[in-house]
Image (cartoon, rainbow, N blue to C red; front, side, top):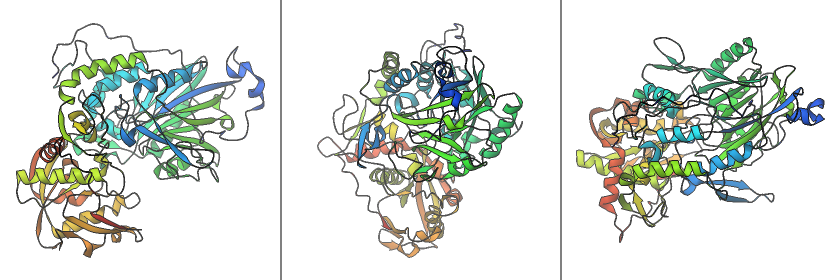
Amino acid sequence: MPATAPSHRPRRRRRTTRLLAAAATVVTAGALAAAALPASANAGESHRGHGGHGRYQDVQLLSFNDLHGNLEPPTGSSGRVTEVQPDGTTKTIDAGGIEYLATHLREARKGNRYSITAAGGDMVGASPLLSGLFHDEPTIEALNKLDLDVTSVGNHEFDEGAKELARLQNGGCHPTEGCYTDEEFEGADFPYLAANVLDEKTGKPILKPYWVWKQKGVKVGFIGVTLEGTPDIVSAEGVKGLAFKDEVETINKYAKELQRQGVKSIVALVHEGGFPASSSYNYDCDSPGAGDGISGPIADIAKNVTPQVDALVTGHTHAAYVCTIPDPAGKPRMVTSASSFGRLYTDTTLTYDRATGDIARTAVKSANHVVTRDVPKAPDMTRLIDRWSTLAAPIGNRAIGYVSGDIDRGGTESPLGDLIADAQLAYGKTQDPETDLALMNPGGIRAPLTYAASGGEGDGVVTYAEGFTVQPFANTVNLKDYTGAQLIQVLKEQVSGPNEAAPKILQISSGLTYTLDLTKTGADRVVTDSIRLDGAPIDVNATYRVASNSFLAGGGDGFPTLNEGTNELVGADDLTALEQYLTANSSAADPIEPPAADRITIVQ
């Protein structure tokens, strides 16, 4: 669909200086990270930077993570956040949309001459059609307008491989689709940091490992890493030729390097996250004690990253938290995450000590804020969305099916997961009538199907753009043969090996049933003699034809046995399978009902 030749106008000059400035350390769920400001910091204007350069300077750090190209307001549960009220009850708030995020961030910066905006990765990838159709050029353009200063890479930055990531950073039109407009894509004005992602041949980071922000004598260094396990959750082609190193070792290495350069204030941008004890964005993560309300990989990382790092901006789990977790020296340190899809942003105040060049951590405070939709839309973002929407509309507005209500993706087994698995089974049977079942990874389902219209299509209508938002990866639907013993092993891998601590429960097609006993541990949680296909026990010696997407078929998400299948047949992309199923099985008069999600019996 692109086409016009690029104009050869000179690229605009990259930003080398900023009116905004900053340092970064992140803090607890909305409160003071610790005791009090340094005594001289309370002394008024010089401390706050309104006149002269006193010893202490407040620096504002605005941060967010896991935007995933959500330029338009996300729909359904993906476009809401939960807020705990003073009486302990909760309410939901509609949130997100780049037009509103821009307004909120610009408002937050007012009066803060020392302000920086940073992100924790997954700015692109798994994006809705408005951005994904154009290989996320619209999102990079929006982030430039948003004045993002720096971000780490996330796993989804590698969905299309390192060369495409380099293009997003440096600019240039897409190598096969060319230019989408009459202007050449200019790339990101902000640096992507990838300290722990190495070229296997050279042993060096593929992008900058760190970046230093400077403003009138204030210096703050940023180190960016993604999770070491990125190769387990990205297609093999996307990480070919790359090595992903330990997050803690990498951060500590570059913290020393920054210290040698005289940069004492350091923030780590870590695309790895945790699991807060509450889903409410304003939950007190430090109740009853520092870090008590957070678990998961980021807790271990934070406890081991050198005390030279003053704060961690994190992501990946799409959770919201502002926690203080003790560093190896036992001192509290801010660790934050702002949910996902642009629904929240974190505002952290770092107090920079000009005498030491370091952050006075006892003065750090931080809180997550909702990107509400009750503020004016940023006009420049509206123009951006309108321009790209015009290009996308002929493809995105086409109706592909009808639903009678919201089809959600939440829960151990989800209605939407069942629907997608059924669609892949149906598609598989068109390629090979002997196809027995289908398996779908929950992480590949990126949004719910909502009944309410997202545009002018009418309630209950599923457009191609909505389907694309649900399944944006362009994985193919592959068929493979497995023995019954292998199939049982696949189901057990959901809750064992790399998936034992955080199970990945596959979504299953109609006819496959089993019991998941969560009172047990490891592989025993899948009750072997409960596994049935069309009511019959699985025969360990029989052969079963299984449909799954290419990511799963290659052993992704910690399912190595799926890579051992034989007699592979590669089909069309998974969105095509969903589109064909919706078109064949629904109409305006007879829409699809949300599946019951009753194929897995859960014992708790």
